[in-house]
Image (tube, one colour):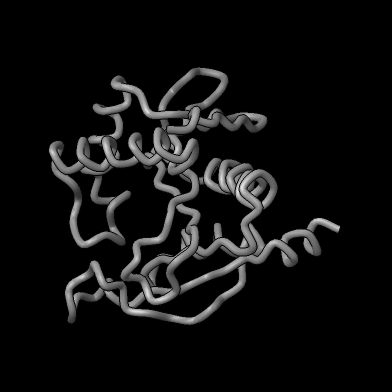
Length: 186
């Protein structure tokens, strides 16, 4: 077990999950606007199980999909971070970056701000060579975040966790290499 890492940005704290995150996380996961590009909103039990997995990953590795709160108010707004790729993904092994924020916190630049801190951690502290992100084809909001992070398109794939024939099965893949990130910052 590694000591959980916390990251801070100008406006946000990325931290280990807490018990008091369960209700707002369940509300986020039940919101059809937030879950538009997932096969279905999550029940409270599914949301709790997801939080338990995310917490356990951070306990095990020290990093993961961190709970995110605003520094000014301490309000939980969702999660952003890094996660080990599922082994059944066609580009595994590796690490992905991802985010899911509660609808009232969209459009404020929080996803990009927190994701930049996660990328800095991944490339700097973890020494990763590349980090990927993926989303269903029509999720333009997530794709815009990927582009703001200077990630580049790397193709399409059928997500193995989405049933065959489902309209969300086809995904866009984006990648960012450490060298690309360094060049973009110069």
